[in-house]
Length: 342
Image (cartoon, rainbow, N blue to C red; front, side, top):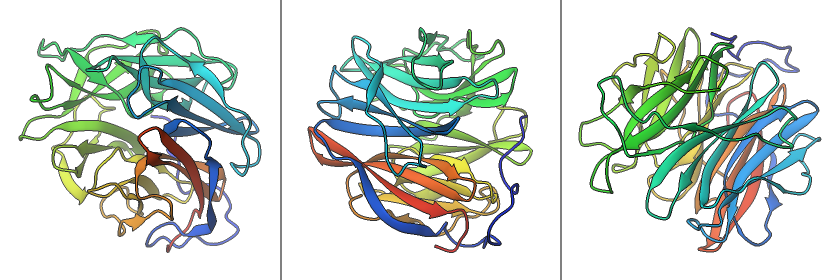
């Protein structure tokens, strides 16, 4: 496994490892222009940050496409948006990560107005300026030979090592009456192809959606949205994602849990309460216990997902989308110190 973030670097203070990460300054707007701008994701690039998000006329619309912007000042200001992927139908939930070879991996899925039907991974070799032809993750079946008709992704590719990439996704066989199951697919050829799905969580009258994997000490942690209960569960794998422990309940909260492990060793995540309020939360022991969930600053009462990344070695940037109408959602940001207690 690649080196796990956490505990490195020289801090200008001794991090307080308790409570939530402390806010730094006030929340600020990134983009309040027209259009539905939602499902942001962030990663570092040389000299700055890369932000991607879905832009469309509504929350679900056939014109949904993926837009990118860059910042060279830690997210204080952003360059003009530019389109990086615009398929014939709705491209949803983009997520980016920077690989050890310098490429950017972008995950997304296609939605035809009725079903999530195609998970894709795109790669960039120019720091997100352009992305290549999508690699279709079309092996929607598990080791037991079960084939799934529909699949979606709402998390970034995870680089376990230079020879093992993981993409967490969720799949089901038919319409809304059938619950989703959480899986992970792998690539051992640098993302040229992705193999069979290994099960993360299924069953129990639960709909297991939007799994998010983050490396922790000697293992992988996965946070899973159980969308029919508005709950979050978590599980771990000690064999690079091949098998997973039984998932356990951790909190009542809806939406995907965008999570990073910070330089001070904290797990920092953003999601939603059981309704529509955006929140954040911190763990100082790799998910064994979590601090109290805290509301994001206003406006965050109609939260349409968020993203977190280090803006400096000692600060974390959280960007989220706030819906203002069925045809408009805007982007806001808050800086946090990589230290408690907030």
